[in-house]
Structures are given as structure tokens and as C-alpha cells.
Image (cartoon, rainbow, N blue to C red; front, side, top):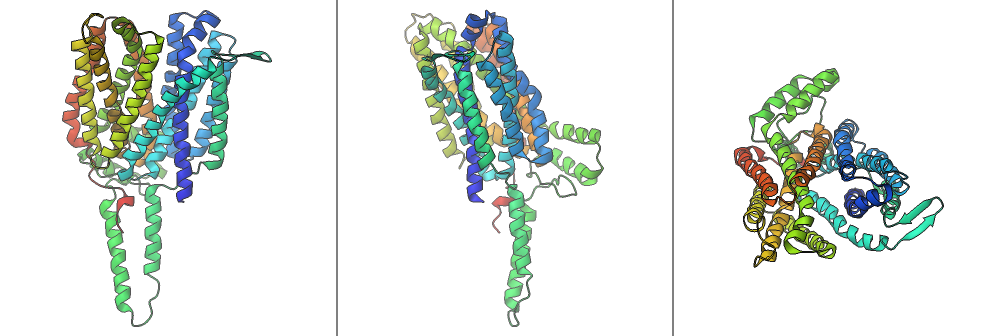
Length: 493
């Protein structure tokens, strides 16, 4: 089991790594590809960028619902990877700007499998280890963002013709990703396994112990029998004490963790009175909707939206800001992104260490404080600065560094808390909903930054105002995002 779990974990991390690499090798040349090869305008470039997020917005919840119904993660990923392969081949072989647009939409459909993979992580890890697993997985995606630019240096040198296809610096990113995603498809086929849930594994251990403890005992060993019975009772008590208070259904679906809000108790009563076998589609949809209308889940979805909105706004703004205020060229901005990637890895490493001692909600609060400090720094000291102002480099780079360092402390604890607060029978749909929320933010963030470009006070003031509102929501919801119990797998039997 340990080898299968290791190989499955590696497979999931490879999927996120390739997602980061794809982002980093496609986007740097996408604008020139559309403009120089097909004469596309700026609005079409924006539409092409949004196509990926739009597809993710639509299919993320669908993949999540399929995962919740089947738990066949392997088949979901193998199916989704076909869109990744097909979309990147279309990008490589594009004969018009509309083919490029369609290719990014297809790739966005393939990326929707992340919802199933995040649901798989939640299903097969205990609460104690989940934050660490999430942080490692997301950090590996960031490594892909660092590896991608290095691959682009090699791809820029290509200029060949293969039959009817041209392999140059514009089309080669698509060809490279076709090869890589095909290799990953084979890897998933061979080395990804549909593992039992962490609660099922512990329950099976308990049942084996129970069966063993009820075996006939030799005469004269009544004390041993009583001792075994006592152990059985203790094991049963541990499981009952540490299981969640809201059973998904009477038919024995997995349980969710005990939370500190009354909404979960109401959810328990509802699901105890209605079994899944007698619910029709509208009833199920109603109960799922009610599950997500809890303050703590709405709050965490708001965190996802604000973080992605602010991140994509900054990504859109940073290149012209570095040119305007620091006079940097393409080489300087490339060094900036490389340095940002290294800083993110350091931040992830610190997060992994702190996650063993500090709870998710405190890590999230720390990340919000860092983001607020970074945006205030940039708004007050850098936004209106003259390029010849003394210490301008220190002002711009320090504020940017504070914002970047705080990102992992927002992404990972929010992901971890969200998975712990979600009922386990809707983990996949919940992760898909989270992806859709992030996709909307990824569409709106660049639109806002593009509309207010070069007006840095306005551009930074809006994200700062949203962050301030989010901090108020955090303080109001802080007691409701505390998970009080452990998983069954954490019980000491």
C-alpha cells in the first residue's frame, strides 16, 4: 500500500508541475504568436488568455461531481489529459488565430482535472498531514513556473519545418507540451492507483482487530479475553469520539470533521433523515446547495477570489511598472520573475515547517497581514514615485517581495481549511467550485489591471480595499474556521 500511495502522490505532483511549466512556456510568446503570425489585436489576445480560465470555470465543477460519484480519479485524469494533448497539438499546428483560441480553451478543459486530484488528496490524507501535502503540491507547481522560462531559452533557438508544420519559437511550446503530456498519460496509466480513503483504511484495521478479538480463547485465559474485549471497546470508543458528528447518509458515506459551528449540526440532522437511495436529483442539488451556504465556506471562497484577483492584477501590472519606475528591460524583468520564484520556494519551505506547529487559520491570518503590508508599502512609497527618486529600487522591490512572500501563506492554508470544512461526499464538487471561483478572479484581475494600467494609485487602491474587507471578514469568521477534531486515521487505537 505504501508504494502505491507514493507512486500516486508522485503522479499528482507531476500533474501540477506540468501545469506550471505549460503556463511558463506558452504565455511569454503567446502575444507575439498571435500578433506576428495571424495579425491579432489586443482584445483577441485578452480573449485567448481568458479562454483557459473560462473552460476551467465551466468544467471544474463537472469533473468534481464525477469524482464525488465515482472516485475514479485515474479515469478522470486520463480523459482530461486527452484535452491537454489535443489542445497543445492544435496550438502547435494552428493555421489561424481562432485555432490558437480553441487550443487554449481545450487545455483549460484538461486542467479541470485538478478538482478531482485535490479531492483525491483530501480523501486519502488525514487532517494532520493535509496542510503539508497541499503545500508540497502547490510548491511543485511553482517550480514549474521557474523551469518554464529555462525551457524557453532552448525553444527560442528552434527553426525547423516538419512536413506541413513549422517548429519555431512560437509553435515549439505547443509541441513540447504534447510530448510531455503524452509521457504523463503513460505514467498515470501505469503508476496511478485509486486508493481507499483514509477513513476506510482505518475502519478496515478496526474490523480486523474486532474479528481477531472475538476469536475463541483457550481455557484459563479469561483475563486475556477480557483484556482483548476491553481493547476492542477502547478502539471503538476512539473511533466514535474522533469521527465527525455529521454522517453523510445512513448508507455509510464517509464522515466530515467536527466543526465549531451550528450549521454542521443542522446538516447532520438533514442527512440522517434522508438516505441517498431515495433522493432525486433536485433534492440532492438542494442539499448540496445548502451545504455551501455556510459562512465559513463562503468566506474561504472569497479568500480564493481575492488572492487570485490580486495576484493576476499584480502579474499584469509588474512588467510596465518595472519599466516605468526602474527602467528595466526584458532581461531585468526576467531576473525579477526568477527571483520571485526562488522567494516563493523559500516561503513554501518555511510554511512546511510552520504547518507542523501552527494551525491553518493562523497561517492564513499571517498571510493576509503580509499582503496588506505589501500593498500599503507599494501604494504609499512606490505608486507615485518618480523614477529618479532616491531608493526607488528598494521601495519597489521591497514592497513586491513582501506581497510575494505572503502568497503561499494564503494559498495553502485556505486550500487545506476548505478541504477540511467540506463534507467528504462533496469534496470533488467543492474543489471544482473553488476552481470556478479562482477562474472568475483570473479573468477579472487582468481586465482591471489593464484598464487602470499606469495609474498605479488607482490600480493598487482597489486590491488594497478588497484585502481590507477580507481582513474584516477574517476576524468575523475566525472562530468558525477552527476544526476541532482529528481524522479517524489520527486516532491511536
